Length: 258
Image (tube, rainbow, N blue to C red):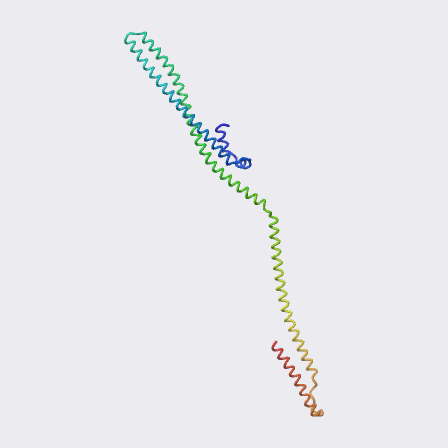
């Protein structure tokens, strides 16, 4: 797998797919970052080597240019001294360095282009790694949230909702029954009190009727024309009336006290 393919995998990874996989998403992200950092180290080494090669080629090119200039001066000096053969040898040596310089110049231009490309790639990789680290932290936070939500959903699914609601319904039914018993007891207590008052009222009517009956049973008053009873009978009648009157007074007092 190439460098940028790994970067793309980390940046564009789907969180749901990661959570559903058997691998630990956090470890996968850590491993991806580690791999990119290893690639960064290798790329930095490659850039350093390319720059070193470029500098070496540049030095060789400079040295070749110096040799060209030197043998150019030697050829001129030989001609000035009248030694044409020596001047020809100097020009041949100059040509050799000129060819070498041309090859070095071509290599130096290629190396310069390669170094610039590697530098841009290095900067891009560093930026991608920084972005990947930031997204890694964001993804880790989302993974943590997703795990917590999944755990919560599992707890909710594991709850026996029907059993809990049935327990609430049973408790409600017990409360309703308790309230009904309390209301019934209150109504019975009220009915018992009313019955007591009804008995009192009924007892008063009976007492009144009893008093009226006793009054009816009293002997009628003796007329003036009726023969006088013996003294013993005259004294007995008032005593009987006094007893009834006393009993009636006692009943009236009892009624007044009730």
